[in-house]
Length: 288
Ligand code: MN
Figure 1 (cartoon, rainbow, N blue to C red):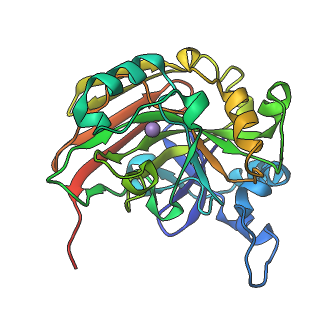
Figure 2: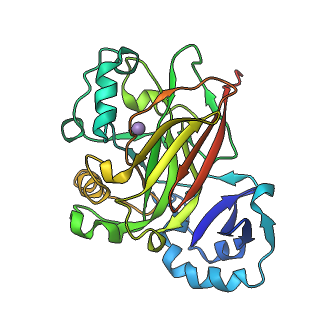
């Protein structure tokens, strides 16, 4: 099933080129008083809601995908975890290019571990990526994104895929420079997620997903998750040995070789096998 959020926080199921508005299901989510839970309510209840979503689709108002604004398919991730240098050829290019490494040592992922991106950086594909420091180099990083479906801690790799709600395409946008990754990759709009969430049952083997990224139609990245240094089950094992994973937590699995700069006016497209295509425009941040 393909789940999306669109327009005014409506809930949709995508089939072909249509969106079925199943927002009525949102009324079934548990009500929470302040403080709100640190997980995403929709993702936490997605399995139990699925039969209702199917029912609602029978009489749901339908819209063409081209007529809606797609929002990030996960509204309230508790945290956004990301894997640095998780493809060997990207490690090599990062070590070779001083515009990428900025005299920071680029270590292997097994040694440097994972990092976190601010939740406030998250957008869906209807919003542009707004460069905060256009005078610096700002790179695209195409990544397969795992959406965690249930709570777990110290999850073994062999059990890990049972904790996955689904998959999305993602962009881990990055300002290059000497600062910590978490600062340079947490700028507002620098985490793109979409176009929708494809539930895990539709992706039987996340270890073999082809994806490619173009800028203004020119191919920059072309890779497959079979080349991940730490594959998805072991990323979940690694992350959950440090953090409790909760429904709606996102894991950006790392970018392959071919990262490169974008400028205001560019259009970035990423196509992910089994999921779909995300396309965003690049602009500069409005100064207020
Ligand atoms: Mn990345």
